Image 1: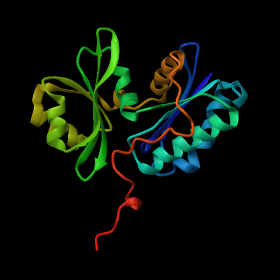
Image 2: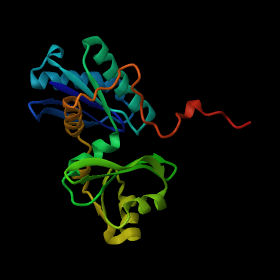
Image 3: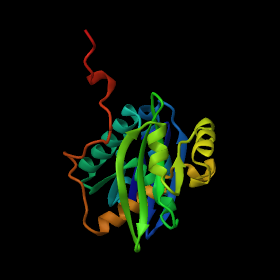
Image 4: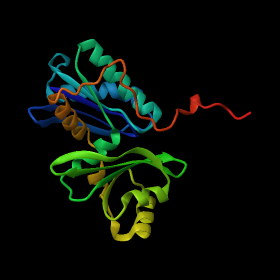
Length: 226
């Protein structure tokens, strides 16, 4: 039984994966309350599935990009459980988790997360010759950069505000297929599935060295202008 944890943004989730299926899953709006809400929701998920911590055989965590505090909370919890239970841990890009449900799509998939200051955390993924792969790595772009990344045709998904969706429709017209909000909800079940695939291939992260993907330094690390 694999436990997946995603607290990358204000939308958080946890899932259990077993026998090639999502066994149980919870998604909720955490806001800035990841620290207070994560462990109780993990326990709720285990209770729903009638699963004990002893039944877990692996862990997955979304490692960002996203909110600095949210990503930190998820990775800290996953590392703590991995060390305490001596479980293998897999960290996966939050943007890949966002994109993966659209792996069968014929077009490239561009996941989008707001990064503040009118900028966005983005990447591009595509299934090519039967293999799911990242074709443009995680990066921060402005609106023009997002339009360039969409290119000739792409499916755009993620935490896309209505205002951004309207701007995209006006700027790139038929080039951007924008996922509906209900379909674009990032699911911890997708994180669990990706992690299960990597565990089968023996791709396990070192618990001590697993690092978040921030793309920017946390604000507290910036030097103040003199």
